[in-house]
Length: 169
Image (cartoon, rainbow, N blue to C red; front, side, top):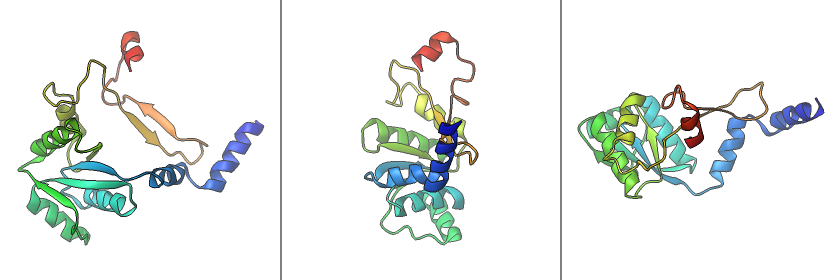
């Protein structure tokens, strides 16, 4: 019980888990990140805020007029940010995968498109991102009543894995 109390007190003293993770990330150089289809205020604001905090160096990939309209609606200045104009979300996802496969970006950030649309591009055999290993993903949750980040894996990709799949993950 003492360890749980100490962990909870440390968590409260340091702030939320998200704040702790943000401090750790801010201590690292920004990741060059493909932001896929940031055509709404929420996804575009997230990318611009992450860039402002030094977390990412965003490359915005989407229909230029829609990205610019979202920026105007959100009151965001996109000067200095790289934009790649594509016709639609499927092209944006494919272009992001291409950049990642070539090593031109270190991360892919989801914008205003369905998760399955982005994952379809990522897991495609021609994406250049697949290996012989199984792909997996993790949600990181900040639960105020829990002293550490809560990690949930494979809620979308490997929803009912057998033992061999779990071993591979």
